[in-house]
Image (cartoon, rainbow, N blue to C red; front, side, top):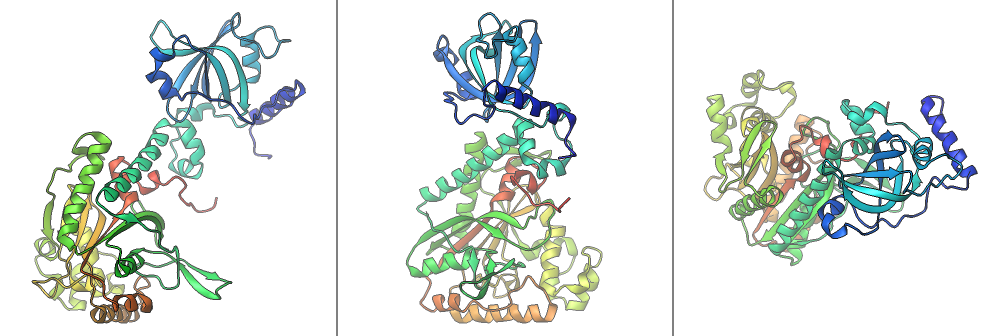
Length: 492
């Protein structure tokens, strides 16, 4: 405790003195009746009634024998007024109530009050306090930090302090909760039901990503943290469910940057008898539904750009867009030629296989520039091992991604349901891994998933959304870590 500020020890002594007076500075309970926002909304209804409120002291103004202070709870700030003549003094040996408050109460303390509502001359709703008590003593001073943390690392590392000081931070996480709640409502209203899938999996699959590994002593086997829930949700479709979805955490042992984080919330949904055209319509309606319910509008502002969610979204072809910016068709190039032509766009291109280069070229040269919601369709079949071959072009897959604000936020397929072709595709992925030493590609086939397909999966449309990225954009945050409550950081 040697690195504690002097104020810490001063407040410790206040705790000792409170306890010497038989006053407990860390209460068990308080009957809080209203939140700050409710008090303001119901002012006329509550005026004249004795109400109980609790919150954290965020500011104090001493005015002779009176005190004005501001208390903050999860919803808003509310002013309180303590007047020596009319507010009960819990410390009778101290000259007056205001001095009692000044002696033992500090900015940061959590207190409970009881009193009546009134409006000051300036029209501010205020609680005229009749009695008050300490609920939890704050030992570390907030001081000038109260004006807001400027250092992002401190915001992430001490999120609790960030939430205390910045009401906008609490509002952002409340809205993230609302986005998830609205997501569930939308899909359930469409007839989907949510079923949970394993977080620990014996074989990872459903996406190309490097997994986290662990070990089960009970089962005596290596397990992986889920990188996607796709293959298990498809098993449910095989089993007879026709519309399933799940909102869950995925884990990918890869880099951290503005738009990537190893632990993130994803949502996947599958519908029997649908294809990727049905999923396009569903995705458009879902995103439009979110914006309308969050903002009562079809437009948002994100980092200086006005983004419109009016339907329908623009549709473009994956390969055609690449040809426009490159001047040639990268899917028809030999590997070494493609590497040479791509050096000016991509780093370490000599370590990448052909289809990884093409994927990165699209993200770099096309995807980043797609600010308005755009459906990118018909990817090369080699990039889409779980999607059906396009019914009109055997070199393409029935797949689409949605790009928004330069980020890919959604991925969808007409799901491959031919077990023979699925095995061939997965075997090709493993060969590609061995050739390129790409750790993100699968190292083995999920034989149980193939076994499930052999019992026949109906034609199926599937889609996945990156919920954290959606929240990041809809809440106008520059980094994905701004909407993750407790992001991991390197140890100090």
